Amino acid sequence: MNEMADWESPLSWDARVAMTAVTELAATGRTEIPVYDISLSARIGTRPFLLDGAPLFIAEGIFAAELVQACQQAGVLADALALHRPRTVTFARRLVRDLAEHRKPPMVLVRRGLRLWREDASVLGRQCELGCRPTTAAALQRRARLLVTAASRKPV
Image (cartoon, rainbow, N blue to C red; front, side):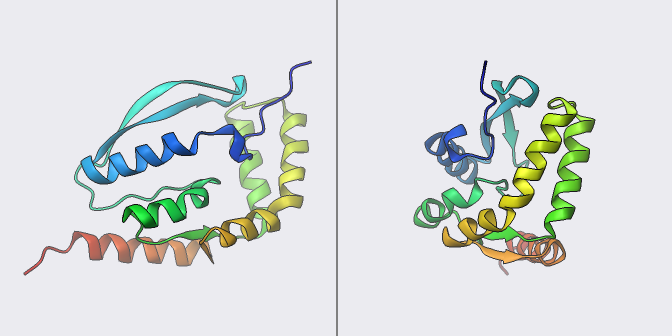
């Protein structure tokens, strides 16, 4: 029996490649990002990602915290935030998305979602240990607007 990939495990991605993409994006405004087919539990290619002149970008996802220290050392970190929302909201949003995208059979998604619901506090705790500050969705949106406004100002 094939074991299903654990996409919430840092072992399922390549931090070195991710860091290369972040620094390349910060330096050039362009990088290649992976494309995954979650239903196949596989990486199926890459695609270009362009900033199109944006003054900054937000690297997000469950593993973003894994790169906080390296991004800080590379001088490409404006802030490190971890979204903290009620875990039942996260469970419901994840399940609706995964069902709509037919990522896995429904019972697999429910079982996985319940496991992640139970682990939610430890995930946030780890992100904070790695240098992120917990924040709400509303506060995150305000912070993002402030960062974009500050980054887009031209010196007088």
